[in-house]
Image 1 (tube, rainbow, N blue to C red):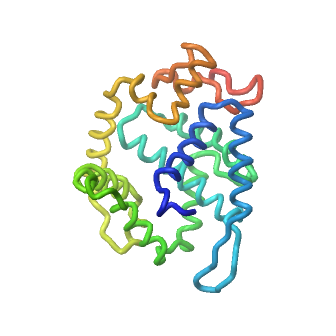
Image 2 (image 1 turned 120 degrees about the vertical axis):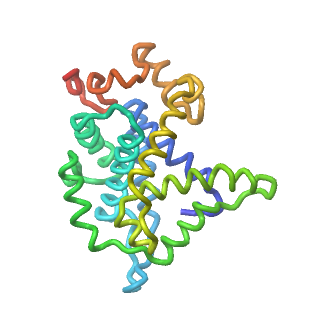
Amino acid sequence: SDFRRDAWGRLMRTAGFVGTTTYGTTEAAERAGARVRKIHRMLGATDPDTGERYGVDEPALLLWVHCAEIGSYLHVLGRSGFPLTAAHADRYLAEHRHSARLVGLDPGSVPANRAELAAYFARVRPELAAGPEAHEVDDFLRRPPTHPLLVPARELLWRRVARLAYDSLPPYAHELYGRPAPPPATVTRRLRATGTVLRAIPARLRWQLPPRHILRAMDRLGPAARPAPYKIGRQAAILDPPGEGAAD
């Protein structure tokens, strides 16, 4: 990934995939998955310890990315004060086995609930390490290159966002990076404050941000499809086969 030269483009492509698999049609999600699999087939890397080449579409790597991504969404959402129950979280993980299939994973190998996700992280933790590449990405995300005129804004806004994102990592991740973990209660208070501010922004304004997946889904499905916390648990999953995903 050439994220150093096209960080915004990489972010938008990732957001586009997540938005499509969340709010798009089944056909659009399948096309997005096919594009991701095609790109992954062409990419590889070299193991710094053994010198061996490997593909980025190896199942173990895809599973780590999937679990880290989906797990972080749930983790931050819950700590930010969103009304998410244990049952909601388990259903979210189970439904995301569909998105795991789209990137090339066997859904049966993907954690389907919080207990399975926790067991997965416990199993892979001894294999994790923060090598030079991880520290390089860490530095890049904390201080991304920007136009000289935008440096003050980066220092004022982005560094706070990046710091909160990194502070919300689990303690073992801070240990891997060689820095002390911040007090969990302090991070949770900051996440709750940030979540409260962001959720106070009118929904129609938030949904205008690119790539506008929510608005397009509402145009397709009608006003009743408007997302709202009280609907959690009653809506069918986007990728549910006909007859599944009905109200519990």
